[in-house]
Image (cartoon, rainbow, N blue to C red; front, side):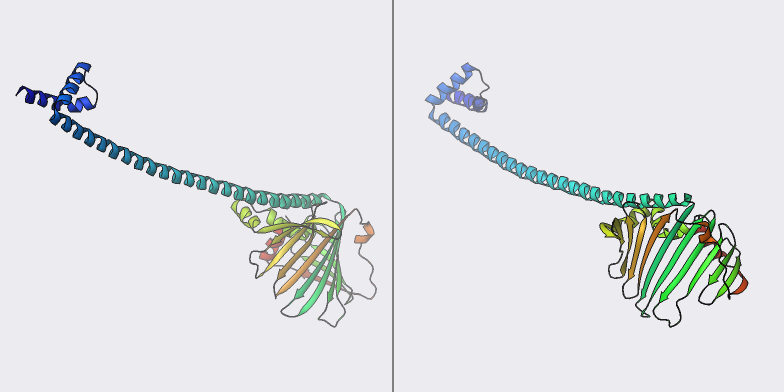
Length: 330
């Protein structure tokens, strides 16, 4: 009976004994008992085995959980690396994109500013040659224009080479003063002189420059998102024209429709050539040459023309056309 009571006490203490939280005397008491009590010893072994089994299961679960966490951490690390790489690629792509935008924008703005400086010139000529090929009507023409400007007086020379007309190629010259609604027009092919008066000023001091460099001006005046949108579609390359290094700005929104190129001489930063090709429709090539301080007063004087008929006319335009001309001449 005493032994059973002792067994009961010992068995109640087994969990604490296994946890090693008993006093040394209590541990000795239990060890002495199980050494002398086969039944308690077996019960303790069974408890120990179950405890070890649980510990092993817990350890295995911990290992599985650790492996799972390790896999998750690896995946998270991989995702972080991929995310960082994507960000880096985006930064590089955006950097290259805006670097290109900035480069092209600087070319356009610099060229535009150079054209604006020309408005202060008091003596110059601008020679323009425009070559047109009409693929639809199958004809070709070359149009020559030369502006002379000195001391608020001007002369405009025009002539044509037309492949589809049998008549003599026409030519004309206009003489006048800046900010005047009167000018004298001389037509050599018909031997006619016309003194023309209009409801607007034929030419301003800036009109020749504005008209010649209108293409670069249109792109330079765009701002904000529109500016980025326009420039993003431009490609730039280096090329040579008339022995000079040039930037070539190529505009091609739809490769199947055609393209437009503005050639800007690097030395002067002025446009010198414009090419526009509408595939299977129209090809236009325009070249511009500026010469400074080459005009004499006699160049803009109205010449005496014997045998030419003289006619006085009024040339009025509608308000919409007048507004367009005034905007170009600003």
